[in-house]
Image 1 (cartoon, rainbow, N blue to C red):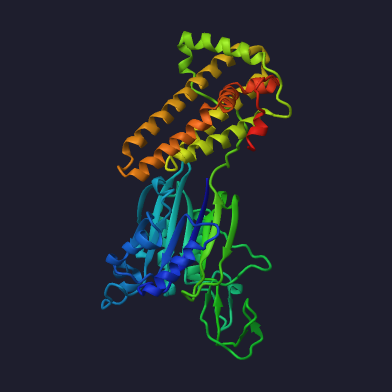
Image 2: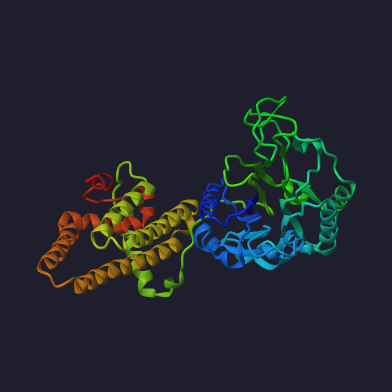
Length: 461
C-alpha cells in the first residue's frame, strides 16, 4: 500500500481567497496526498465544513479548534478563530482504515490510528509545536509517554524549531536549546523515528521564509535573491518523521515551492507500507455452474465438430478477431441505446475475454480439449442471453417513445437500421460466424473457418 502524507502551515484560511488558494495547492499536489496535516487554520469550529464540501469532497476531517489549542491557552482573552491549530484531512479512499483518533498532550496536535489490510498498525500524528522553548520540551516529553509504542508512527507538522544549525540562514545565529533538543531526540529514539528530509544538491532546503526583501547580502535564497543579515531569514521548521522501517521504503520526500498562501511551504513524503503486491499473468476464470445442463453439453459437442471443419481465415489471429468483434458490438450498442452503450460494450468485452482465456488454456493443454468445449458452451449461453436482453431493451424503448409522429418515425427507422444489419443474408452469415468466433476462439487458433466474408475485411466496412 502506497501512502503520501503532507504538512502545511496555512497561516489562516478564514478569507475566501485564502481557501481558494489552499484548494488549488491541494489539487495540484503531485503525487496526490492521502493524509494532510494543516496547521494554524484559525477557523471557528462551525467553519470547518467547507473542507468536506469544496476543498476536499468526502474527506474525513479531524479538527483541533483554535480556542482549544496550546497557543490560545496562553492568552485567556482569545476567542474562536484566533491562535491557529490543527486539522487532519484524510483521503476518503483510506479513511475506512482509521480505527481510533485523539489529541496530543497539551493540545499540541492530533493523532489517528490506521490498520492496513496486511495487519500493519500505523499511527499518524499532526504536530503544531508552541513557540516557547520550554513548552516544546514539555510537549515532546509528554508525547513520548502517551503514544502507543506498538504502532509504526509518522509525525508531520510545524515544529517551530530547527534541529541543525544548517537548517537556518540569515538573521542572528542561534543555538539549539539543550532541553528541547534532548526531549525531541528522546521521542525520536523511543519511537524509532527518522527525518524523511533528503539532504541532496538541488532540493529545496527551507520551508519557512520571513519574506523580507533586501538589496545586498553575502547570502542568497534558492531563487537567487540577495539576503541581508538580520533581514530575510529562511528556516526548515516543517518536517515529516517516519518509523525507520517505513522510511526504508520511502519513494519521495520534498519541500514544495510556488505557494502564495503562506510564508510556510508544504512538505510531502511518500511511503510504501508493507511489501508491494506482485502482479502476475493468470488465466481468465469463468462460472462453470451452467455446465450441469446435459442438453447444453450435447449442443456443444455438435458445435465443436462444425468448427473443426471450417477453413482457415488468412492472417486473422484469435486476438485480432475478438477485437474486431468487440468494435462491431460497440457500434451496435450505439445504435440501440447510447445510454447503455458503455455498460453493454463492457459486457461484450468480458465475454470475449473469457473466450480468449479459454483459447490460451486450450493451446497450453490440447489433451484436455473436451473440458474446454463444455466451458465454451457456457459462454454461448451467456451470449444468447445477451442477445435476448438487447431485444427486450428495444421493445421497452419503443414502448417509452413519446407519442409524437416524428419521434415514432425515428424509432422505427432505428429498428429498420438494426434489421438491415442483422437480417441481410450476407450480414446474417457474418453475424452468426462472429458469434461462433467469440465462443470458439479455439477454432481460430486452429485456423479453420468457412465464413463467406473475412472478419478482418468486414471490420473495415
